[in-house]
Amino acid sequence: MPAATNKADLLAVTGKELTKLGALLDDLDPDLATKPFDDGWSVKDVIAHRAHWIGLFLGWYADGQAGKDVAFPARGYKWNQLKAYNAIMRDQHAALSWQDTRTNLSSAHDKLVKMISDLDNAALYDGPMKGANNNWTTGRWAEAAGPSHYRSAAKFVRACKRSP
Image (cartoon, rainbow, N blue to C red; front, side):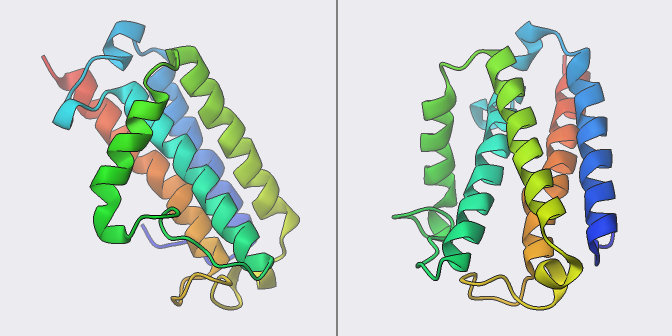
């Protein structure tokens, strides 16, 4: 699927992919949501991860806009340390209930949509995101944090539902 190139398409794909993921989660048995699958990750872990990463993206954007140093992927971590960072993040969210995890995703999504809605096409797509140190636009980063992550989470949920 090609990346969005304007605000309207970004908002549309963000809503569409969350709706698809939400439909999978709505009828998910809570016991299945907390059952460990790949590398010990459960659906709940993956959903908590998606909400967390939206928050990271929003922080990256805010720091870049403020002219601060942007910590990718997180302060004290490099991209090649992602597995370790994600394990720590998973442990930090382990005590959350399934319902609280879903609420966190919904809240993170709402913040993402508000951020996208508050920006115009130029701010989203007319150049690299400030502080990102690459050529990705703010819109492309937003898509990676939201709809792309929703798609991969949906794929994981479908695989878990098929698993014996």
